[in-house]
Length: 151
Image (cartoon, rainbow, N blue to C red; front, side):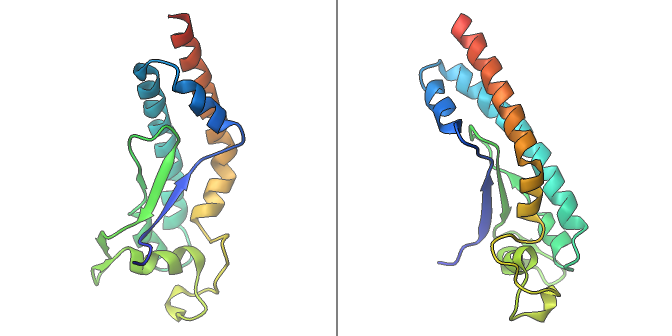
């Protein structure tokens, strides 16, 4: 079965240790962390959508409409693509996703060569903003852990 979406999870060294420590806290702590992760993911999703809408490939603004936050995760998680029908011809988003994000040597409609794993607009946006998102997530996790450790 072909891949139909790109899932991006913001991560950094040491995050697994933080997540492990949250298992020892009450469920309410994890719920608060999920809420904070969702807010941070929405911030990142807005930036990815904006970069997609201004990208040079004609399909990118259309594909950018499929950028969504994955709910219920402890880490900021975003998904792009899927089976949503987009564009004038109502094709599934995944049919335009990979050419729009990574370029293509075989299909000229994407107007640029394949760029390897770096991509043109999703991953560069995550790279530019990832450290800021991780820093905010760590701050939120520390505050939540302190709150529940005291109580």
